[in-house]
Length: 132
Image (tube, rainbow, N blue to C red; front, side, top):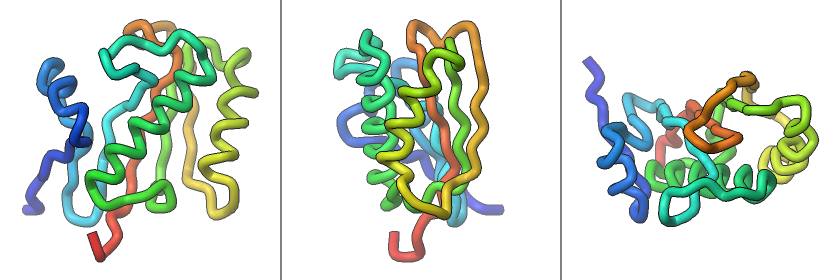
């Protein structure tokens, strides 16, 4: 059986301990990243939606970095939105900056009515490069 290894970004480990989950789990050559939100350093939501999305991607990047991955290693994305219709344009602009050229990862967007005070969350599956 393949062993599971918990992955944590260096500066956010206490946040995950407090809530009882791992930032990501590495198993074999796959990385399963827990939902990342646009939290400020104190764990509170960034009130500006565009900045919240950017922070979520920054937090995702920190977790990917901890596993030796980049955005190019992402194969599957699920995003959660509290107001998809009104948030779509902002998300697409940020998404284009991160994933500017094909091949794009698979992507599923889900509208939800609660994200613990946040308006956006992103979780991914990435393939870990053989050099990591």
